[in-house]
Image 1 (cartoon, helix red, strand yellow):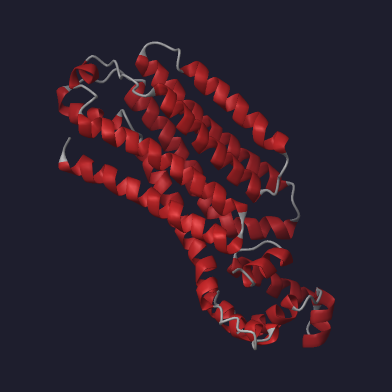
Image 2 (image 1 turned 60 degrees about the vertical axis):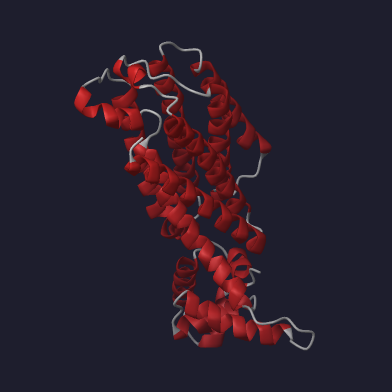
Amino acid sequence: MSAFYFFYGITFVLVCMVAVCVSVCAYLVSHRTSYLTVSAFFFFDMLESAIVFLDEYQGSKMMADILSSQFPMTHPITKLVLSIGIMASMWAFALAIVNKTSRLHMLVPCIVFSAFEAMSLVLQPDSIKQLAFYALRSLFMFVAFGMIFVCYRKSKPLARKSFYARYGRFLIVMAVLTVFVLIEDVRVLGLNIGRIEVIDYLYFAYGRNIPENIMSVVAAMYTVRAASRILSLRFSAPPTTSGTSAKQIAEVRFSAFCDQHDISAREREVLDLLLDGQDNRAIANELFISVGTVKSHVHTIFRKCGVSSRSELLQSFWAG
């Protein structure tokens, strides 16, 4: 095992560990289940990568197996459990995005995926087994992305625009990387490559998927960025002493919240009335502007704050 592969494996496990810790902290502060599902995703991904790393470090994967293109699959049952955990947590996150809470929506796709993953373990030879095992995971990711896209195509225009402003770029990046994940599986596992000049790469690559690792790192970056907003609000909150009124707390928090999300002076006036529970017409009358102008300001505030509704805005403002 070369030094590069050693530090690559260690670094990736540490990235997943950081994402788990940050996601759990964000969940404890905001109580948003999406952060809990994200933390579960990175936890299972971290364990799976740790197993691959230990196999490489201990030398349990022999060069002779690579040269003969056998591609042995180590710890199949453990990897099956971890794969189900990864996909179940990812599916739960997708359902949280589209606000679907039905147990049927959660259980049926996960059960079907688990059954196909389990059946792939009986395939022979091992190269086909691994190709089917990991290709099913990629296909399940496509199903999740497709479900999100279809649900928001049917949603109200404002909600859809706010959603794409919040998640659109992230989902596009994830979908593109998923394509590369599938290509990598086919290239490394589906083709009979045994040339000496690429054997060191194969020894490292057939036990993991580089685009999948990149996808996890990108997801970790987005997660840390989103969670940092929640945590920054928590730490910017004033002390809640017995002599501090809710109005005083709101005034201090309001300034920090606006600075955090780059809210303009006019948008602050609209935001102040939004947080007070005023509807668009009442805000228009208060500020002597048209309802259309209010809607434009509200949409901009939602986009900057990464929310899609007034309830989410209130939850984000009072997080912690």
